[in-house]
Length: 216
Image 1 (cartoon, rainbow, N blue to C red):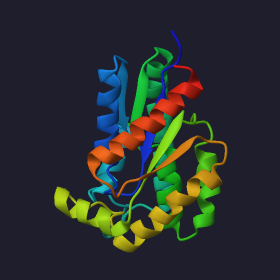
Image 2 (cartoon, one colour):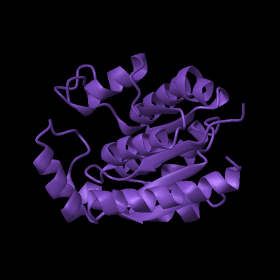
Image 3 (cartoon, rainbow, N blue to C red):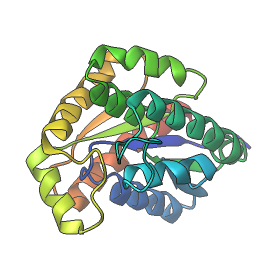
Image 4 (tube, rainbow, N blue to C red):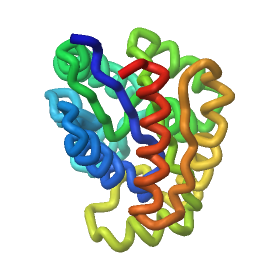
């Protein structure tokens, strides 16, 4: 049995990464392919802690509510990622099961670099994650911040610490640079401003091309 296909879905908050990851997993299952759908932060012990930080329920000690620093967050995400990779992603891929993940190390590069105030630190964050295998395809949902903001408001979930419009706009611009910064990795940049079904069709087409390259 060959390796499964590894696909990451990326974008700013409100881009539709969770929705599109689920739709893609369902589409692959309809084709008869075994699929494992996952996400980052993961559901493992470190990922569960990160989710508490993102929701403002876990803060720096003695800080009167100040969130953890970006360096600490980058290290936590990298640790969660390696645990996620070794305990969940690689075992499934090795069994010939496709893996679709809602976010991966590209989120760390974009989010921690921008929250650091020094976007050039992206290379350090990439180094932290250098042992994380690259996906067979990373889909970037390119969405205007105003569109993403409306979607975030509509879902009525708890606001997370990164959901500030100006920061999200900078992150959207950073995502557009990733294919150049990570030259050699397979990317598909998709217009995420379109309707759910239209975006899904574009992703399916990109994944089909990735499958042809992999020979699966």
